[in-house]
Image (cartoon, rainbow over all chains, first blue to last red):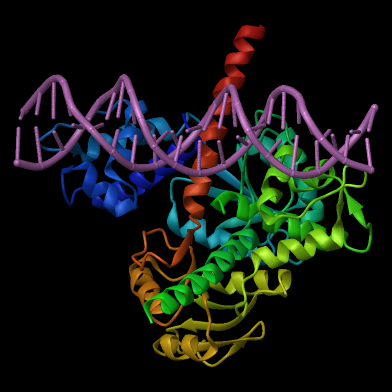
Length: 214
Length: 214
DNA sequence: AGGTGTGAAGGGTTTCACAGCC
DNA sequence: GGCTGTGAAACCCTTCACACCT
């Protein structure tokens, strides 16, 4: 399915999980508003998963939830590795652990001897050398890459070699992995600079408005 | 300009900054590869900023850098506020501080009395009540929102009311701000679940490949 | 020959608008 | 009447292809 739409499906699921057992049915425009999309878009996103609502009751919450989970989750293990337990990694660990019991970070890797073999947020930190060994043994398919830029490409290749097929990459550098490995880049600095650009533009627009309003 | 392209312009600038004084000229395909985009896309992204390269030398690094900065940065202050110094916020502070000397986080806000009035990474933490006061006094236009979901909408509105025109939002909820305020949403849980989905799909594809290859 | 700038084509995503249904 | 599912249109973004330049 379309890349963008998959992301939104996870938002629908997340919202529905909290609604479950508070209400049994929901209309597209209600759910859409909670997620921040248009009703038309929600309905279109739902089309490929084949779950149908009824015109006068909307969607059955439990049923839609089940259908979404079936399409979003594969048959796999739903375990995740965290590569790099630095400043950012150490924050991501509790972040994901607290939020999503369905996707569990079960192994972390770092080079710092101070961190190796410690357990952080219920997750053991291994020496980076053991990356392939642990990922293969645990059959981990998803890795979060939060290492310094210089080592990111190497780490990504090693993870892919050990069986990882999905990477959430925080390093600001293009990875080089086999075609079938899915990479989602999150570039926080880019995001902040983008916000700054449009924020500055708004200032100009406001000032322009002032001159025309005066 | 187009939303996506602006993001990439920041990547070109970041890369060029490191190249500066190591080489004086660069071709589109070289820079494009470093950033992870196609050469055609880079040239198209550069079109609106009006900086022209020469066919046999490419782009002059210093000149392009200056031109990019002129278009990306407005006339404003380039200061940022961090709202919410919890698990994620405490990581973002050193992250941005270490990376980007041009955009400085100069004020943070939290409700935890333990944190208030302390200085973290050179940034003072204020009581959340003083949000409007400090943002207005410092003329901050950009804020990073890293508060719990329940308080995000309120914080965003207060920030916008105090003069913020750009928000980098980590809370998984749609904000409600005036039209002219630019919002960039970063939903880490969505990103991870998206990766998981495609990672699982790849497993299936691989297995399908196996059956056809056998 | 091997670059750049750009019109035109292509592909993906979102919105519109409406038939069909309860 | 007000909802759903969906073809069609609109929009945005990326790639192609090529004239032009050195």
